[in-house]
Length: 261
Image (cartoon, rainbow, N blue to C red):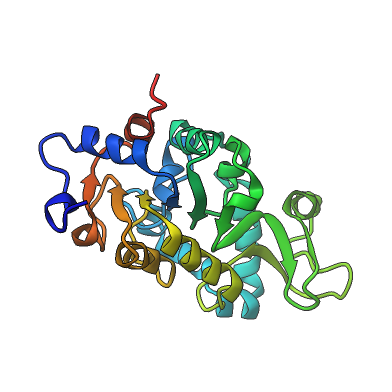
């Protein structure tokens, strides 16, 4: 491609990006909470986000508070009981990315989401890189044992307000990355590696404010990949993108991926 002239989509950005997607062979998708809002899972920082509407809920996502305060843990378990992930279904945005995998052109999918809707939509689990873990598992903070979340939620429904690990008595939490908790280095390294191997990076539904995962955008761009951002709000990295597409992800992404009905 020519240097700067091809760095931006002009007259018809949807058609331009659709052409880029159609010619790419090593597409890497980075997804954030915005891709799951059409499935009924609210984002965190948007106008109707979980933390926007209820700033106190952020305490449950801070490791220090969670480990130190039984009342925070009790509130967190009650919130997990009614988490929208249990009833959510993959939407058209998720299925559009599955279409790219079935065409053999999706190199990897990096997600900040913890809902596993990508796997439920049909992605091969080994192609999905979950940088923030999954709500569908529980981890013991003492011995590290992992068990299915739904098994522990049954204990909560049975009256245990702050269930402890049955192996060692340690504190249980969702197998997700909380504020103040270290990311898994191997997972982040893999995300950066696949980004450097991409010929097209699709950043979908992410504010691109959370590091280090947001760093995959400049990594991919510096390696020569085109960068396309799809989001209904401005992001922190719009200026790095070759094209920025605004709109409903469930409507836009199938059109970009050539899977629209």
